[in-house]
Length: 223
Image 1 (cartoon, helix red, strand yellow):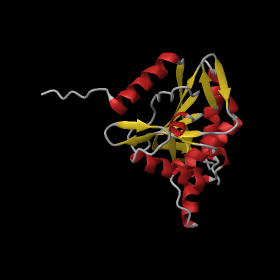
Image 2 (cartoon, helix red, strand yellow; image 1 turned 180 degrees about the vertical axis):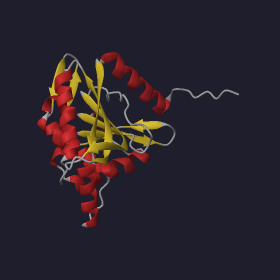
Image 3 (cartoon, helix red, strand yellow; image 1 turned 60 degrees about the horizontal axis):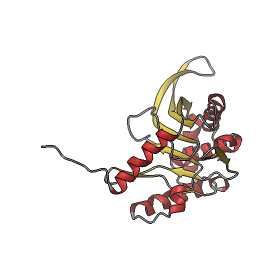
Image 4 (spheres, one colour; image 1 turned 120 degrees about the vertical axis):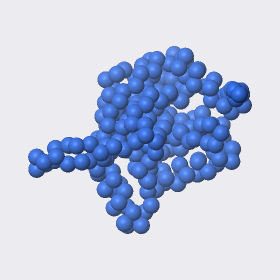
């Protein structure tokens, strides 16, 4: 018996958006990884002080900080024009039941501290589950983060949210052997990162600079 699942409704809209994104953009992906020792230490420090923050919240903060230093990656491609935004309107990919996916935006994420980023992300996730997101939230982002860190995926090739310049894919954490300051080998947590960018709007070198900047923000994380 073969089960047939029609590509219609929301699933059909997602399928059409993915095909459109690949058909209309020149997409390329850079892969890298960052030492997450400082990030995990900051999460532990905040927790001990009574502030509940997730790894994803701190990663979003690192992305926002990096985008402020690399503004040419923050915006949208509209026809033959690149529209760069002063504000970081950060879209977050949210998986929903029924093999569905949305990526609503947190407007003005660059003006939020990490607790505000967490609250905004949780609010979007809650409203996404009851179909209460607005059209503006669904279409107005300037950069997207897609997190597969709870799976076995270390790196992947995320598809750009149609119209945006970039999307960052976050993979799982893995322990890697590195040489410490004393010369001895030690294990440190690393997170896999995959930056897909539209080569029409951003060349490989500045995209590499952005990914490097994100890694550096993670590696010196302090709220």
